[in-house]
Image 1 (spheres, rainbow, N blue to C red):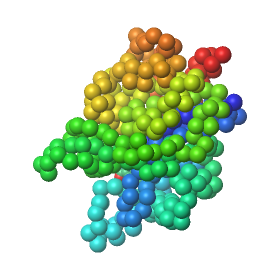
Image 2 (cartoon, rainbow, N blue to C red):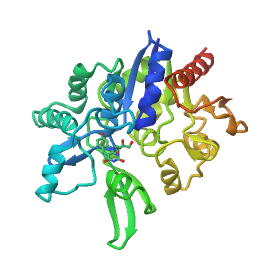
Image 3 (tube, protein in one colour):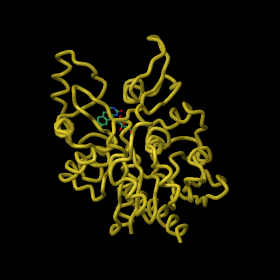
Length: 312
Ligand code: FO1
């Protein structure tokens, strides 16, 4: 069975671990968000690709959900000693190796999709991990504060500002000129089902859907999403700040409507959100807290079962 999943960030990566456990024989292709990517100290950092790669490859810092386990920060401390900015992004020594190899391969002319494949040769995540695009795109956030109205990189808003300053606009720079990475549309076309994990609907799933051609390709498939909002609050991260930024209420109903019945055939919601409904979408309520590997596997299995029941 061939499954395609769009993923970004910590929740998405954890869900994918459950999906692998729920469908051990399936061929899973993950289309990873690259809007979070940032260049720091001359190195290209791809947080959402690395989070999926490390989480599924067994190298993730489990408590944080990002970065490597058993990490040290000597290089970061040395950079700070030189007064190098920014100091608000926690790049560890082990993690630096990933960014050095990625940057070296990109500079040699390899597209991000081939770089990601090469890095996954070591980590063996057990899924095919494709960037949403080989073309450079970045999520920037328009804010107004003491320094005036300006656009900052998503990571600065997310990590340095902790989304404490309202985002007046969230935009994916470069989206209109970006093409899906090689293999992305083919994987969607070949998929038996498509599963949208409980990733951030704006800056992860929403970003991937902005790459020309991806949403249209998905609309022809059986797609089941898992709500990232339980009882009016995001489980993790700051999806509420992102939803507010685009004028969407933080609820399972509002995210269902944001994705729309053109995209979704099924929607898994938490029991607190049982009343959620939209014509043309099969809504199922069940516990959605991924608070253990077993719980995560059961949620993924429920999403998969719903998708298979709708795909006949
Ligand atoms: N998130 C933080 O909250 N603080 C950090 O210092 C931080 C560093 C970092 C380094 C590498 C990496 O791959 C991810 C990192 N993240 C950090 C998480 C990152 O901001 C988010 O994972 C995504 O960009 C949003 O899903």
